[in-house]
Image 1 (cartoon, rainbow, N blue to C red):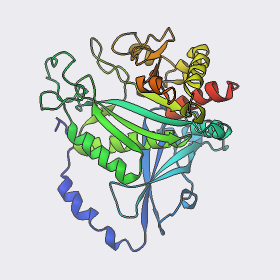
Image 2: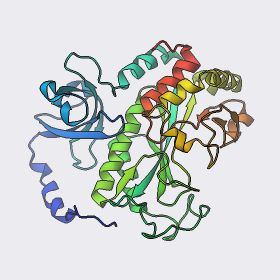
Image 3: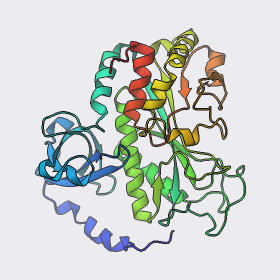
Image 4: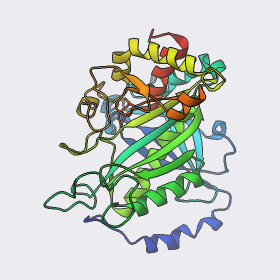
Length: 367
């Protein structure tokens, strides 16, 4: 499907993957974690002599943090604490994927471990039952960094026919999208849907609804599975929020959010009150909404291509050019949810969801 040099024959691998019935009670557990970039994921595998029934049965592990931008070589051990377990769609059988939190030698969380503080905030706000659904946009690239399926010496036609498109001249990489969808369903990730996006070679999948901390867990695992599926196809996935300069859409991570009060009759008043609180903390949220604390998002949030300006806060019913959109149906029903359109595609969902709950439920930014 792409020009690349690291190609292997997957039909040869299949012969060995069929050996799983002879593993005699053993289980392969792939530990997955976030490295020091705040964006990229790492993984390695441990054999267990039993099949874990819950996350509490999986042992802590360690790795070399000097090779992941997280430690010096003279004191390099970092610790992996299992946090969420999923079925492994690649090895299948009893094998597992385990999302982990990273801790330093002194038991402090690593700088990019935002799950710990997010989990504390979600626990404090549990009575409000914060639900989230995130729309993850991403772009497929050939290994030379050029958008997958684009002419090598030029550009495809202008945007217009590609969003939710069909046909070989409108969408590129659907095999990867379909494989990812099935793999997420197998794993137990709460994937809710998918569609082709406005820029050719750009796609979106949705995860949710998820309660509290599980939003970040499921989105990070969905990202990992996407990268792993694309690896099999020899295609690169980028979560860069503006992968192509010029008159092309960027990529976001639109975050849908509600509390029990917003979902009940008359909830529109609670939605509007939350939006008012968000307007007063715009720059705090911008700082939390991409790994470069606004630097990446500045390339995307220009006020064009279905975005608001990074410099202004706005809201409106059915307005995709606003910071916060209230879906038209929610406006008509007088209850439901709102959509924060500011988070960048490479955001950390733990930071995004934590920021939203801090502002709208706890009124607490003592971080």
